[in-house]
Length: 488
Picture 1 (cartoon, one colour):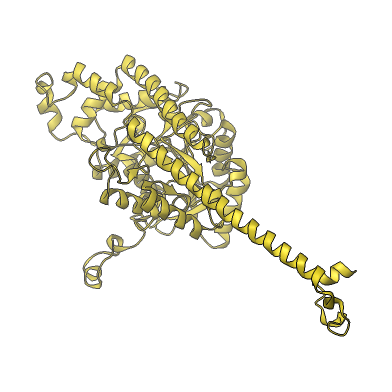
Picture 2: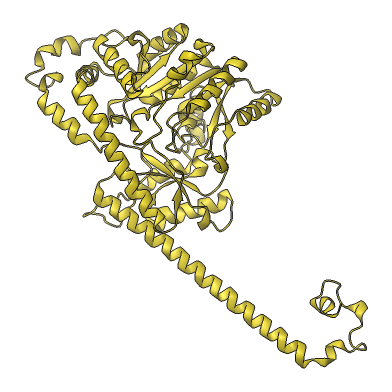
């Protein structure tokens, strides 16, 4: 948003600075969708939203549970007797039943290999608020965090905007599927030190947004060792933990650190129910720190972004239903796997590949073959064609600070099956049309080359004067001329 000079003078520097990241193509794509949203009947030529990581695939299971458990809501006749207790002010620790249910759910998502302490559960307004709260607790304005790229486009807003903290990308490469290596971490850390940047920690997303991959135990151990050696923090954003739909399984940093000699005070987890349960509107964010001081500070800060007690009451009941949770996690995994397969298989049929992934609500699509040149400018040009002509809101890799142009994040879980078919048809048509144009250009180039060869061949046989010493002596012929090479 642009501010006039007059308004800038009236408002604060924090309110008017440009660190929100709103000028990114990531948010521009949303604006394009908002101005012309696709509807199968009412606006079939509109923009299809494939830049939003939402997960409504199992809403039917949620709705069935709510109908069968009306007493879980204070807004029903069955739950009305709890209204007075829930509607009044609550301690900012949160309802005990809610914290216990969330801690149990986090453990179950990780295969019950870790027991989470309900007393360390700190509420926040979604993962956005949770990430910002952690940064406020750990760093001062001007400090920085290493973040392996490509990373979530919203981090510019969540981590930087109001905190004054900087992000230092750790550039990962497609040659090893963007794996986070100790060498890459060391290189980014040392470069920051030479620039007098104070690194306070490393922030990761596991499963990865935007890659849709999980970190293996070896990588997690390497990360824990790195922050321990440097005496800096590790923040693990694990909000996609329950979206894993095939092997390998999700491994929490909490599991890895159990058998490591490390400083537990440096390890912090951000969690949410926005992705795993599909509840972004409920604004349930969680800060879970192994550091007592961070837990206490985060809890005081949570006053600015608590989860409503009505929401806590409902979710405490839902997440405590072991049978429902088990069925939900199994069915969610199946449906995500099916949708992921439909999309990636459809792309394979027209020669578009993706990073092999097994988690998240998106995949990382390789469009490098369609770039005019391997530059960010060419990527942006391709993205504008996809947005404005193909009418698909996919997010370009530059929004995620990817160092290699041509990658795009594609969200696949936020639409119905018929919209999926339309989206795939549009992608296929676009790619095939591009290939036809390329083949046509190649044919034209080949034809021009053949004409050139024929003309030169006729010229060499018909012009005996070309070798007349009186007309063109050797010293007047360029040493790089094909005539010189032909004569020697």
